[in-house]
Length: 212
Image 1 (cartoon, rainbow, N blue to C red):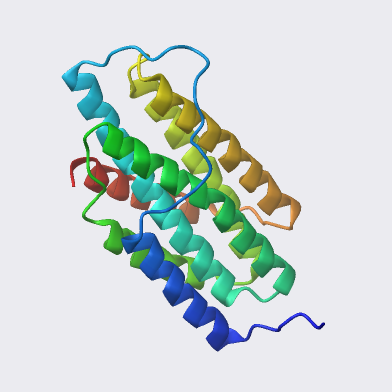
Image 2 (cartoon, helix red, strand yellow; image 1 turned 135 degrees about the horizontal axis):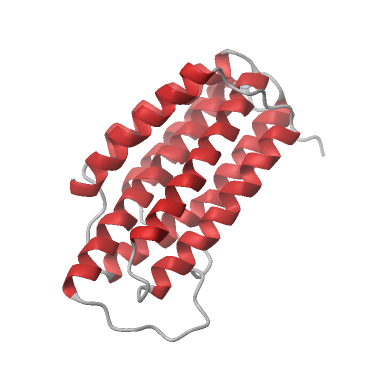
């Protein structure tokens, strides 16, 4: 039986379906990572801070889904397109873990998620139009910045919030792996101004999602 060839319209329809599911349907995934140590009680202030930080991480994962989908839509190589979609599928678990933890902490996901999604989708599609090497370099730079961002959150989060910390540690390892994968597939280093613009955009999203 021959494998089906997916054309641009097929991918576009699939992307629309994934957009709807990302923004409206609670994601399902394997159980979230857990710490070997026993959980300690959190103060109200610690719970509130963890909920806000996990909301930022959830918004980042919404944006990551959009970036991968946008890049996959405009990828020139079927191999690269498949690799991007595979990474998106693997990171879908992050979305589920973050959302579940936010609910447990008594928080809510960001009201700005649709903005982050559609903006990131456009950026991802644009990156793909510059060629697969640039697009993969964009992935590698994004993952490096996310790794740094997660390290910062681990430094801010209460040492007693073991469940949230276990999730972030696993996410961090996955981001490192996806960045290395992008480089291995031919990702090119991005010009310094582009990387700086990405950091500025990330800060805007982080601050907005922290409060909203």
